[in-house]
Image (cartoon, rainbow, N blue to C red; front, side, top):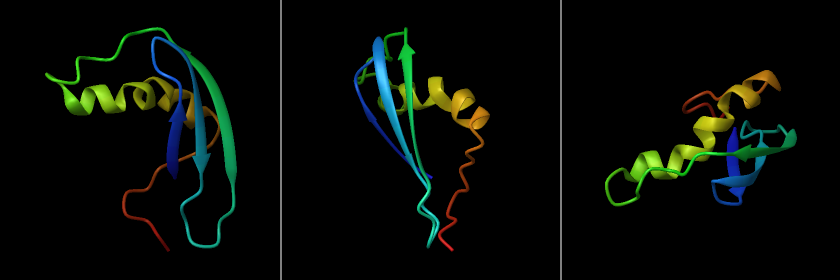
Length: 73
């Protein structure tokens, strides 16, 4: 699964999901209000970058999407 976003928390964020498996063309869009400010980028780079994805993970799972690390076949 590839995940890209438009929008910055706090506030509305649009998530674009795309199946990254070879030959798979499935796509989905999820709109979610992420109410919390991300951690400061200078003190927690990964926490800042992954803040929106972490908030959306339960919703993405509810939609039936699963991420497989390194699965490209």
